[in-house]
Image 1: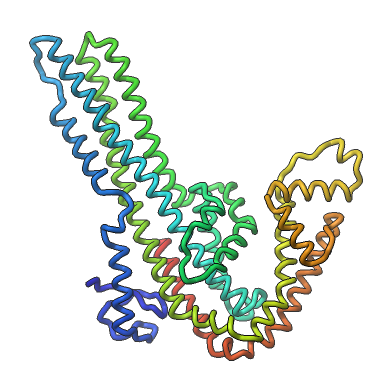
Image 2 (image 1 turned 135 degrees about the horizontal axis):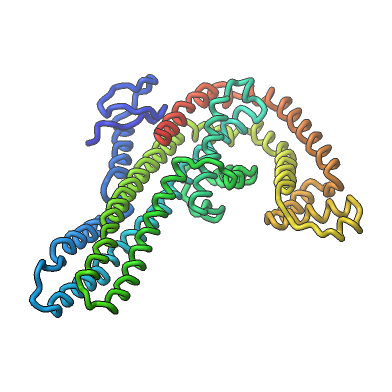
Length: 440
């Protein structure tokens, strides 16, 4: 039985036999056993992404090539030398290179699967901080309540989610296939909101490469090297077989190319170990978030969702949420590039040009239908100019802040708030543990 587990109350590491965590919480034997079982599954070989036999078969074939397919120092006839050379070439082409290729493809697929594991963890962080900052304490009370740390965790989740999607060329449809577990369906809305605010697109302008970038680059380079090796050696074999008169010259050229084989195999081995390590890391973070959310936050979420005053607030807030969504779409549209007709600018007035360009931008973004739907829900007309939009934005932001200010006075008095606010604050330790696990 593994000795190291984590506290279901704060997420910090503890020993299985510890009576209490440093936070003061005492876990039951059942809780400890369940956590230990989950962590054992995470660390078991049955959870590996790349089949062991791929590495074993490749390295074994490489050793066979080095040991059994070297030309003799002395040949009585050139025919014997040619036969030995052709055996070596055939073994390389039919045995070793296909195994390198299969292993490479498996590592590439494993890397893409781990990307979805990362998305799942970052999505959970976003959803949890979204609940704490927007629903529980309120979106305009971060400084008032000293919640800057949760804002940092939210930004961390948003950036890392966007970074992962950029590095692995994922889109929103990939997000929808991820199992977010017990945190609930609202997580999709939180993740969608993150992508809408533009952080994903901004990553395309990165001037520096992150650690995540380099890990992805290593995998891509490993795949490229293996591909080049296979195509390059295949081409070279064809060339040397046409000029086989001097077998030793051909073998010498082949051996030069084969010097890269050891480097490729070592690179793939390192990359496989790194991917499996990442798999265990993100699975562990997922277990911590899921377990601690169920233990600490889910009862609070359920309590709020059964509170009539809170539900009335959510219903009254709906128009403000629609307005904020419209403002986000408008701002994103302003940063979306489109082709503008010279003649349209010349012949149409400012209003028509603004309306036309806004429509084109939103259509390019794939959000024109949603924008029209929001206008219908709010029963308002589209903005006639940029000045008109800015006036709308300022007015609606001001109205939303005033709405929150008035309603938070009531929400702060609810038993579901007063008795739980310290528990919600303590969840910072869980998020901090997950963040430290990822960045260290």
